[in-house]
Image (cartoon, rainbow, N blue to C red; front, side, top):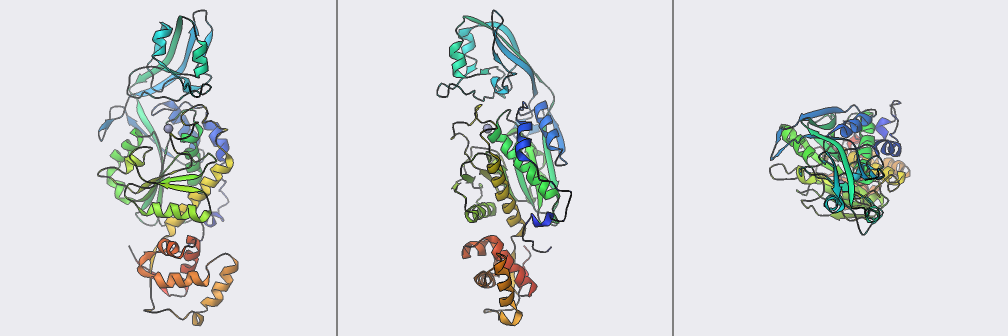
Amino acid sequence: MALTTSDRDTIANDDQYAPVDMTALLRELFPITRSITGNGVRQTLASLSKFVPLSIHEVPTGTSVFDWEVPEEWNIRGAVIKTLTGRTVVDFAESNLHVVSYSVPVEKEISREELAAHVHTLPDQPNSIPYRTGYYARDWGFCMRHSTWLSMQDDRYLVQIDSGLAPGSLTYGEYFIPGETEKEILISVHVCHPSLANDNLSGVVVATALAALLSHGGPRRLGVRFLFLPATIGAITWLAQNEGKLDSIAHGLVLTCIGDAGPFHYKTSRSGAAIDRAVEHVLRHAGHDYEILPFSPYGYDERQYGSPGLNLPVGCFMRAVHGTFPEYHTSDDNCDFVTSAALEQSFSVLVDVLHLLDNDRVFQRTDGRGEPQLGRRGLYRAIAGQREAGGASQMDLLWLLNLADGSHSILEIADRANVPFRRILAAAKLSLEAELIAEVSQ
Ligand code: ZN
């Protein structure tokens, strides 16, 4: 296929495309009670299906997936703590963070002391509700503002959690856009957090917007697979059920916490793969503040994709880093914490990363040794024309023609020349047209 100058260019002639309003979608998804299984995930995926034709998979409870098993399905209808006089002091209807995810049902009168063992608060952030889970604990619990807990001084309370744990299934969504080759890019986001905006929904809405864009794009070299799944158990389930396909994954990214206004953080892949170079290149040349973090076996699903026997080339693309910002896993990670500008900026960086990955190729000179005579081929004139349009400079062309020896990719040449990928790509396009280079099949 021809080299394109922008993924956005490839959609210009498709009048069916309308960009996803990421902020509106985030607000629509925010109130839904999600967990690693249950109707909240289904409802979330149904919302995403308005933009992207997702395949929804249901994997039954009890299915073996590597060292794990798909758990029982959890659903919750409501929960309250009341005084003995009938006054409600904590209500799930006010915030779905109030109940520890996967709490078993309970309905009883209880002493304050006994209740204390089931209450989670943040004494240092007394007006924030913490987010807690107990997927495998077979216990129950309430999360509340520390100030609320301090105000609850009765000896006894009524607690009620109207939840259910039962055989059902684990739900995830998948969307694959085929490319012209067998190779593909994996984009993975988790959909298991309830009303938390940056940690979970920012990744969900940006991935949806990317999928919607690419679904209206032109032909691609690499396929792109989008996964919307519960963290850990969802990724393990997908991997276990798709082991035969994993060799096709050439690059991958986990997206999370990309809606806050802070600098970018990129955690490199376990294997030190090409994706790491691509993301850093785009961040550097976009002029954004960013930090590169080394791989570690903690965080999100990059540690499932990059694990023994799999070692897929998957990094984690973030702005704020989990566990290091005060809003993390609290009621302060809400729609106000996420900005439209940050979502758009994250989206734009990722469009450039996907464009780069799809166009990064290795070329070899067709004309033997030494510097080719550019004037005879009209390349000086062509370069002058490009220059005004922000394309390749003469220096870019010289870099390309010097390093197009069958062992350097366009990205490697761009890094060596310290210029944006697009400019070396433009130089490659000119050189291809002049038949000075040919692609090396990999
Ligand atoms: Zn989280």
